[in-house]
Amino acid sequence: MISEKVSAFDICTILSNALDNSIEACRRLKSAEDRYIDVNCVLKNDMQMICISNPSDTDDPDLKTSKDNKNEHGFGLYNIKKTVDSLDGTVNISQTSPVFVLDVMFRIKMPETA
Image (cartoon, rainbow, N blue to C red; front, side, top):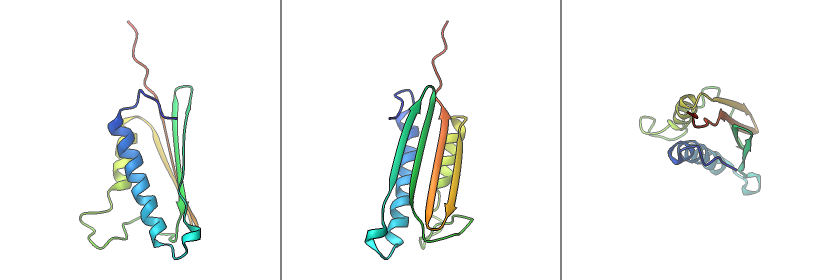
């Protein structure tokens, strides 16, 4: 469940970048049986929570891109953090091989009443 009060642009920025990263991580795994992407979107009261997890084959604390052209790739997490910051939310990353977990949480801004 995703709130209708969150802009499509913000949701697309968060989900598309997170899912691109998850797909890339799954492609690096040798065994197709180990591949999965788990997406949970929860709306509780005025809080939007998004949790995406996938297997990880790395313990790289810098979370740098694995792609060859480093100048054109590696902006996904930056874009997620920038978007969530603009929503006054938080991004928590738990990267403990064999699982990577991205937790995003932000308050849904309700329209001000006169």
